[in-house]
Length: 117
Image (tube, rainbow, N blue to C red; front, side, top):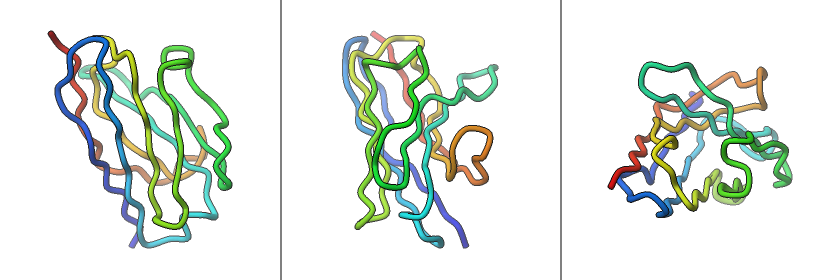
């Protein structure tokens, strides 16, 4: 069974940082591009970043480029998202996805990030 479990969310002040993790199981993690999407309350999902199978970042949305960094550890089946200089508009539930863009075929349950003073 494919499983994606996200960790690392929480409440942080504007300008702060968080590092999200996504632990994958049930499939050959290193064979897939991976992505992060987010969903704010009352809004649709936003595709924010993706990384290739061998660890090259493929995409950052304009809203996060320069502040967020995607990475992965294929030996430990883990995807990461380092988030710096967080803003109130980054408040959302963050989900990891298997695949890239419209090719995402599995998503985790997500972890909540709240940016508030």
